[in-house]
Every structure is written in structure tokens, then in C-alpha cells.
Image (tube, rainbow, N blue to C red):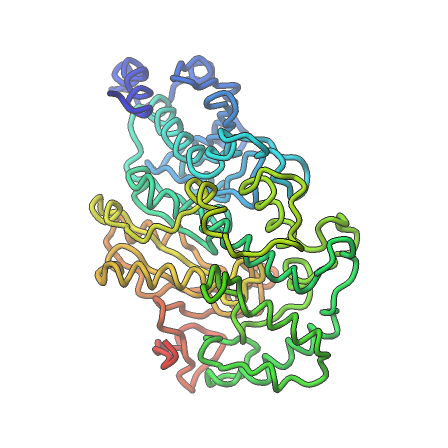
Length: 491
């Protein structure tokens, strides 16, 4: 039985053979005339930036865009999306300027403005496309079009994404390991019912009454006190006072020592750190005590209320958590977070987890095909608790102690969600994965930079977890070469 990919390539066989001796690309008109199974090519237009933009639909509802550079480097990279996606997104779109053919997808639905999963209501096809299938089908179609356009297959294929895109990356590594030679998963949203449970557990404390979402105990003043206390207690424990906590778990932050907080404020912060539980079982870890607290970021993502935000979603994680439960778990728009308990969580989320989650720690298929996976996460992420990513990686290592041969985790101090923050968080992950795949240069460390108006103002090495970068004691602390690796005793 032919796979979808083999069917696509069979249709294109005549085109490829006819062009085998030619260095020229086929025309945009010929691209528009391609006939692929269950695929409609809507447009193929030449850009002034020296690439061809191909737009199409797979299966009647999965929209995609593929960029084909005039000077192709022989590689394909697909970029991930964010949130519930809902529009064609490609976080690797910049790579077309580097010579990569690159693609993105809307994951099979067009979402309404804002953070809404209403598109998933009683629509299992849309849910499965979003969960895992749309990225895979877009990959196969993109590779077929690349073969038609250039007369050759991509020598190497890569995937890179963050947040939802990071979850897509992990899904590919587990479900479709043959799609990509190298995969980069940043701050991955890979356990959707779990992260929704954590969000709801926090919001039940911050907003116990669903009819009053206009105020919370954790105002900006309280958050600033928390931020300062974290810096005061934790910053210098790594040997350098620089506003960045290198390894929050080993800093041993003590909330009881923070003065000027009310009992309600302490209770709210404890809920943010606690995670979601069913009886004595941890469903999903909370945020890491000792990670830098950015008051504006915590307000937007965790605490709220955001000025002008929809009254039914005072902050972003409230919105994501409740929308996941309403439309991807229970198919019930009237579901009420305030009255929900987690006593039957595993059974109630089993179906949703089957197509949303990328939690399988068995990466033997990726290993067998000699694929490589880089996972990274910011320690100060206010959206997705980094401990969940660490737990996953530790479980991968427990299953296969040789996992670092094909899978490595990097934690980024002072990094917010997918970038930014007080630390150095700008990393060329694409080059790192290419060097690993094509040149067998396993990344023992990568260099992260912090820029101001294009100028590098700080650089730091990031070492494979659990090692952290520690200042040597001499030299410019703003430069990476003056740091060395150390394994914290806490790990």
C-alpha cells in the first residue's frame, strides 16, 4: 500500500525525470499546474526577494505555504506555529534568506481572532489535524513540491518551533521520526491536558469566582516585591551578581522570607509554584521558585487582569486552560473551571491526550534513523513551566541512558517564553542542529547572546542539562569565554 508521500512522488516522477539533466527550476505556471493527491495548489508567485511562494490546501482544510529560494542550499526546514495556530505560521520563515526551502501550516483550521479553540467544538477532524496530522501532511506535500521544483529531493530536512511549535517538534520526533533529520523543540507545549490543568489550578486560586475576573490579589506592587526578593536571595548564589539566576532549583528560594505580602498574596504565589494535583498525584508541575519574576510578563500570562482584555479571560493561561477543557476535552462551551476538580482527570482527558500529547519517552525510532533532537526551555518562562520539559528529558534518559547521542536539553537562564528576559537567550539553534546532523558535531554547548539595537551586550554558554554556566572569577562577565560548566548538587 502506497503512503501519501509515495503517491505524491509517483505523480511527480515524470516531472523529475524530464528535468534530471536541467539546472533550471520549473516555471511558476508549472508549479500551479501540479496535481498531487488531495492537494490544491492555489498560487505560485515569484517574490522580489528571490524566492517563489507556493500556497495551497491539503485535504480541503489544511492550508500551507512553501517558500522556494532561487539559490537553494539543498535543505528543507519547516517552522512551527504558536497557540492554537489558526493561520499559516512558520517560525523558520527567515531561513529562506539563508537558502532553505521552508514551509508552515495553519494546522487545518482558521481560528477566530484572539485565544479561542471554538474551531475544535465537536470537530474531531480539526482536533486531529491540530494535534499531529497537519504538520506531517504538510511535510510530505512540501517535499513533493520541492522535488518537482528543483528536480531533486532535499538532502536534509529539519523542523524548528517554540511553544506550540515546540510541541509540534516533539510530536514529529515521536510519531513521524522519518520526516526530519534534525528537530529543535523550544519551550514545548507537549502535554496539553496537563498544562491546562496547571493553568486552571492556578486560576481557581486567583479567581475562585468565575463571575468576578476583574481583580486579583497579586497586583503589580506584590509582583515587584517578589521579583526583588528572588534577585536578593538567588542572584549571587551562582557567584555573579548580574540579575540572572543561572540555576533556580539550586538557589533554594524561600517565599516565607519575603516581607510585605498579604496572606492571600502568599497563597496565590504558592499556587503558581505548586502545580496541579489529583489527590497526591502530580498532574503537571508548577512554575519554578527562584526563576526571575517579570511583573509585566506574569500579569499577562499568569496573574492578570490584563487591561482591556476580554472579561472571560483575564490572562493568557486562563484563556488557554479553559479553552482546552471546553473545546478539546469536554466539548462543552459551558464548562466551568471554578467548579471543576481533578479527581477523574486521567479518564476525562484520555481521548484528548491521545491526539494532543507528545509525552512518549520512547525515541528509539528517532535513534534508529539517526535523527537528532535538541530541546530547550527558558528558566524564567511565564507561560509553560520549564520543570515539565526537564521531567520529560529525565524520563527519556531513564529509558535510554545513551539518549544524549541523539537528544539533548538546554536550559536558558533568564529567558522568558521563547526568548527575551534579563538573560542571554538569542541562540542560532538551526546551525546547531545542522552541525549535529550533517557534521556529527554534537552540541556540548551553544552560545546565547543578548542584543541591544543589534549589538551584542552579553553572551553566555549554555551547556547540556544539568550542567550550568558558572563565572570563572576573572575576565569580562559579559563574555561567554569567561564561564565554565558546573553540575549543581541539586541535580
